[in-house]
Structure formats: structure tokens, C-alpha cells
Length: 208
Image (cartoon, rainbow, N blue to C red):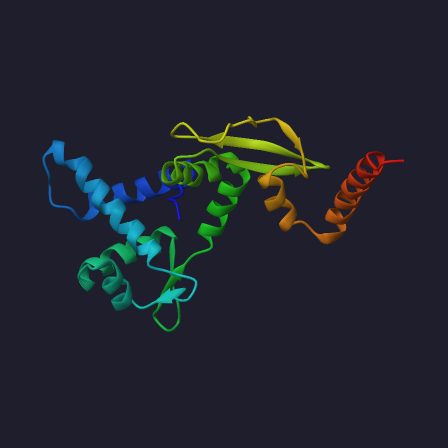
């Protein structure tokens, strides 16, 4: 799965938290090393966030330390800072879980990040792997609309559809993919109309 770039507010919050943590716990460093120290602190914070999964939504301090491969004492200092900042919650069984602050951040991402921004990293990865054009479409009535298209190498197939262009929903492989996931009540009228057109065309060519 392609890496998702964090929302600006989320990135800024993590950077500020990393800076506060590095200022609190690091030994005085030369100015030219300050940035690397802050980034190391940010990487450790992100590693803690990513140690939680759908299957393990709560973890003990030792489990977190094992997953991020840091000493328990170092992990405790970071976890304690995250708890005080409101990003982690300590439960009654002394395990930790992510706080509802992430729900708010996720809402900000969903409200500001469009489908093109979400899909483009994955599309780029596919285009590089296949050396062909990759496009993404959406349904609009009985047509499909190209939202975005990308190619990293000359394609063997002509890229006839450009972003913004509309194509009949029954034309092309992209249409078949879209229709495969559409509800049957929406697909049936489109296919029925097409079948009537094909039948009329064939009957007009029959010898009289």
C-alpha cells in the first residue's frame, strides 16, 4: 500500500510534539545537530502510533517498547509525554490506546483531501510497475468521467481519455470495472438499453 502523506495539521502537531520532547530530554547538542535530534524524536513518536493495529488497539508499555525496538525506560518517557499531550490514553489495566484526538485529525483529512490526492501515489506506483497508463474514473449518469490519468513511460495503448472527459459507461475496460461494483438496479437499465440498440442494429442488417 502506498504511503499516505499526513494532513498538514497532523504533521505540524507531531513536529511540535517531537520538538517539545527533544527539548525536554536531549542533552545539549550543537546547533547543526538539533534538527536531526528533533526528527529522531518525531520518528519514535510515529513508530509508537503505528504500533497500534486493529487487532491490538491497546498495548502495555513493554509491548510498545518491543514493537518500536527501544528500551522500556526510553519508551516510557515518550509514552508519558504523548499521554500528557492527549495523544495516548492509559486504561485501567495499565495498557495504552490512541485517544479520540486521532478521530478529529482523521476528520480533517477526509474533509480536505480529494480522491485525486489520495489515489495519485498508488496510481504512480502502478504506472511505474506496469509501464502503462493508469487512470481513475467515476460514474456520472450513464457515463464515466476520468478524474485523473498518469503514465511514466510511453504506453503501448493510446491514452484516449484525459481528465475531465466523459465516455459512455458501456465503453472500455474501465466501465466494466465500475459497473461490476454498481448496484444491479442501476446497471440493468443501462445494459437493457444497450441490448435493444444492438438488437435493432442487427435486425436492420437482416436480408428482407
